Image (cartoon, rainbow, N blue to C red; front, side, top):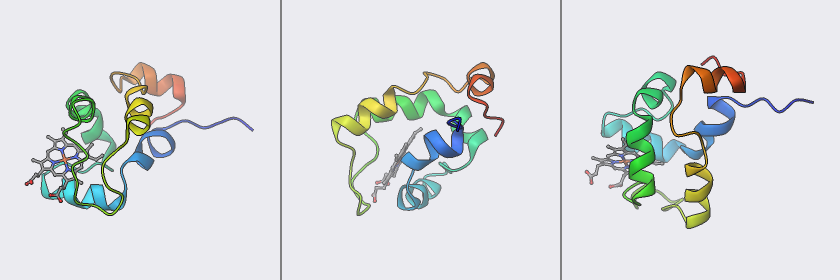
Length: 89
Ligand code: HEM
């Protein structure tokens, strides 16, 4: 069976419900594909610089393995990349 890669299967699982709620308060809905796509570089940068996720959720902050995996995702959520992965939303 083909592995279906999309925003829902690859990226959204990093954003737990608690992270989402906290960041909605910060005016960024991490489950909103269009918004995440628009803010992708900034999201990537705050994770890389260890500013986010900030302590506050039970699942805590990310260890270096979480960060490496997250940072290994493409540098930008371009239409091209989404097309390659079969993601349309
Ligand atoms: C563009 C990217 C991001 C920006 C500009 C940003 C900015 C912020 C700001 C301004 C706060 C509020 C801080 C406070 O008032 O103390 C916050 C809180 C938080 N952010 Fe982010 N954030 C970003 C991405 C993320 C991501 C990707 C995650 C998770 C994977 C995340 C997880 C959290 C959590 C858990 C808190 C709550 C901390 C607490 O309980 O005080 N953020 N963020």
